[in-house]
Structure formats: C-alpha cells, structure tokens
Image (cartoon, rainbow, N blue to C red; front, side, top):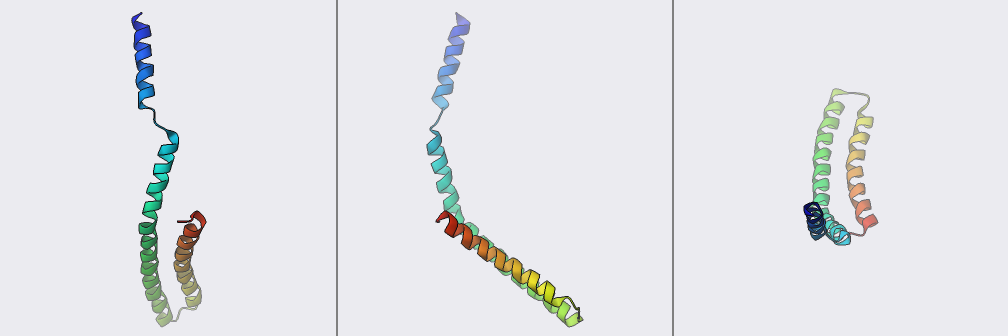
Length: 96
C-alpha cells in the first residue's frame, strides 16, 4: 500500500511542476527579440573595429610595397560588409 501511495504522490508532484510549452516558447521568442537591437549594435561596433584594423593593415602593406595589397584590402572590406549585411538580412528575415 505504501508503494502505491508514494507512486501516486510522485506523479502528482511531477504534474504540478509541468508548464505550458507554448508559453515557454513565446517567452523565449520575446527574450531573443529584445536582445536583437543590442546584438545589432555590437555587430556594427565589431565591423567598425575591423574596418580600422584593416585600414591600418592595408596602409602598412601599401607603404611596404607588397604586391597583394588589393587582395588584403578586399578581404578586410568584405568582412566589414558581411557583418552589416548579416545584421540587415536577419532583421528583415525575422521581421524584427
């Protein structure tokens, strides 16, 4: 008899801790959307920092007379553009 009582008590306690799954998903959705603006600003700041570092690297290569200055400039510029485009595409894709 005691085993049945303990089992019934455990089942009742487990059901009491259960939550609505849809409410949890909606709460997570709202939290992620609230962080998006800060994340976008962070991506823009990282892009600006990469742009400054890239400009210095390209300037150093240009003054040294390296023949691959154009490739290095394109790579640094492309990485900065990629960060800006990713932020814009995510924003428009998810409707944030």
